[in-house]
Image (tube, rainbow, N blue to C red; front, side):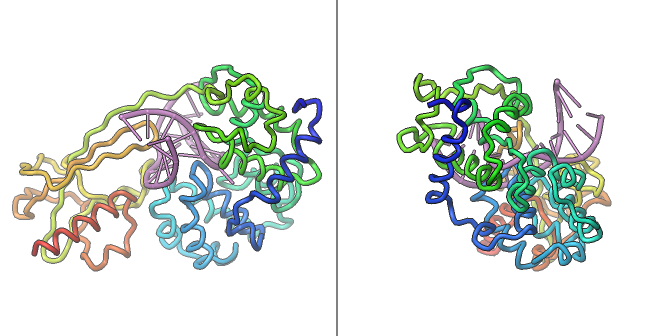
Length: 342
DNA sequence: AACGCGGGGAT
DNA sequence: ATCCCAGCGTT
């Protein structure tokens, strides 16, 4: 059996599997265009499992395009807090405002792509899933599946190059009768069976079409180069006084974490504060950085000056502001220890 | 074409 | 510790 000579047989095997194996996701049980749009924006570079609680909260607070369009932006950002890639939230907000004013509404992939936050992948996903438009999605899952099905061991410089390379194949195997289910089935297969490590070929519904399975080369495909990881060290301060915590507010026009709060770093002060024994050391990875952050306790009396971007936030008001994800978590941890100690 | 953007799940 | 995730916008 060959993928490209018998695309209909491949499509059928995939569809039969998807009908029984698909996960019950909240945007599948009672589908709507709005749910499709929200889920696709949230799913960009984010695992489905990670976004599920965010999706539910979002739908409760912003049940439709109009409610989202009317919401204040602080509210929108607050509901995205912790999910990362915050431009997605700003784009989704703008998208809702543009969408409610649009007439006629977008109905094909190219029209969706004109809206903010919608690129080639998301336009194909929305139009195929919600509007039965025949556009093939090419995400990380689809790249992996197609590279393996065709036993393509080429080395790609980055993910974008691989996406481009497999787009013609994705178009060629698309089931144009049921493009939405076909696209979701491809991604579902990649997420649950054709995984990066330990692919479950013995239960794969399309293994008979898979050239890499026949050759035993599946696990090493696709071959995509990665960027070097950069190590970063940041010293931060834990300054509590009179029931308030000193936090740094990132500028609204910053490229990174705009408008969000974080624990102040020593670099935020004109003269580096004198540090004692560390309160905690945290390590995390983001994109191509490995960040080590050491948090030092400091008495406010030892501060020489206070830059304007630093703000005292009452401890019982912390839930009202948006902190970057890890800093929200650490703040909660340290407050717990702080109250236990006092 | 290359780069920056977050945070977390899985191994 | 490392890879990668239902990618996009900017440079």
